[in-house]
Amino acid sequence: MKRIFALLLLFSVTSCAELQQVVNQLPQGGTVSELDIANGLRQALDLGIDKQVSKLTQKDGFYKNELVKILLPEELQKVDKALRDIGLSNLADEGIKALNRAAEDAVSEATPIFVNAVKGITFNDAKNILLGNDNAATDYLESRTKTELYNKFNPVIKNSFDKVGADQIWANLITKYNAIPFTNNVNPDLTDYVTNEALKGVYTMIAVEEGEIRNKVSSRGTELLKKVFALQD
Image 1: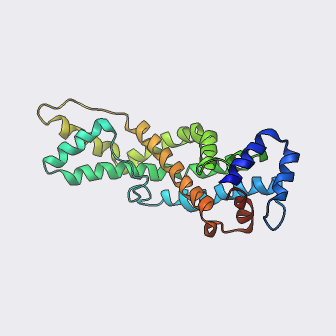
Image 2: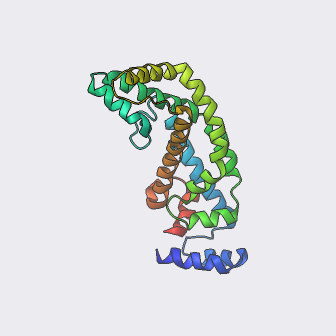
Image 3: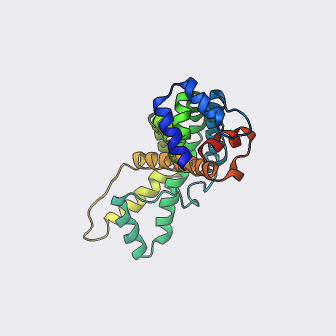
C-alpha cells in the first residue's frame, strides 16, 4: 500500500520519462515498459470480458447470478408482493425471469464495443488505472462505453421482450394487479429499466475479474499480468 501512495505521488509530478525510471527501479525481475503497462491493462480487461461478460449471455446468466439478477423496479415490487399474496407466485417468477432473459440477449452486443474501448487505452490511461482503486479499469471502461452500450442494448431488450413474451407476461401481471381492489394502476418503462440494470450487471462482472487480478497473484494467468500488476502490490 505504501508503494502505491509513493508511486501515485511520483506520477503526479514526473514526466513519462521520469516515471519510466521509477518503474524500472522496482524489483520486478526485469523492466516494465510503458507499452507493457498499457498492454497489461488491456489484457486484464480482455480477460474480464472473455471470462465474465460471456457468462451473462448464457441462459440464466443473469437470472441465476445473485450479483446481477434483475429484480423488479420499485414501482412494481408491490405488484410482485400482491400477486404472491394471492397465490400467483409462479406468474410473478415468470415476470422476473422475462426481464433477465432480455438482458441475457442484449449482452451479446457488448463485446465488440468493449474491444474497441480496450484497444484505445493509452499509457497515460493505464498508469492511472493501475494505481487506482480495485474497480479503476472497470470505471474507465464504463466511462468509454456506457452511452454506446445503452443505445445498443435498448432496442435488443425491446425486441427480446417481444421474443420471450415479456410484454405479454407483464401485461397479464399488471392487468391482474390493477384488478385487485384499492390498488393504483402502474405502467413503468421496463425497457429503460432493464437496459440500465443489464449495464450494471455487465460492469459488475468485469469488476469481479479486475478485483481477482489485482488482489490474487494466482489469478494473473500470464507473465505480462504478473509483471504489470506486481507494480500495484
